[in-house]
Length: 109
Ligand SMILES: Nc1nc2c(c(=O)[nH]1)N=C([C@H](O)[C@H](O)COP(=O)(O)OP(=O)(O)OP(=O)(O)O)CN2
Ligand SMILES: [Zn+2]
Image (cartoon, rainbow, N blue to C red; front, side, top):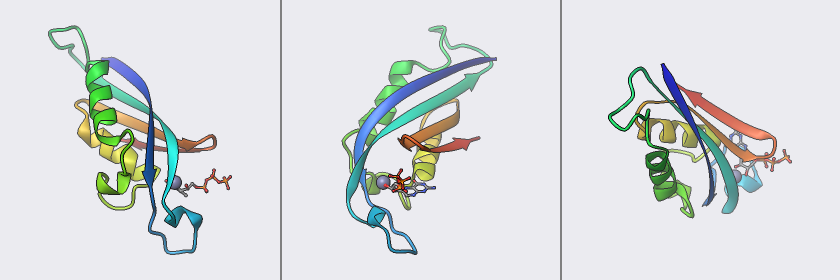
């Protein structure tokens, strides 16, 4: 079994709809740090699980400098961002999304 992990950083904006009063409901931004892990039994003809560039193209192409409410279905929390990324990348088994120094959400298949 082969595993690759790609670390990415994106800058983006979002606002959350919450059932309590919070500054997170206001438009604001983060520099999210994202770890994408893909796993596969056999390598492709290029000797790769998934090309790091493909991971970068998918994540950065859709999310970098974006308004995440327009991309992520539902509330663009770190949890939902992690699931959206995992569903968007072939052979992805785990995504961790770090929103700030102490706040990390992980989605695993
Ligand atoms: N489980 C989650 N909780 C929260 C999320 C999330 O994605 N998943 N997101 C937010 C907001 O995006 C907010 O911008 C960040 O939350 P906050 O609690 O303000 O985080 P801080 O680290 O900046 O605040 P401290 O109080 O200094 O810890 C909210 N919750
Ligand atoms: Zn936020």
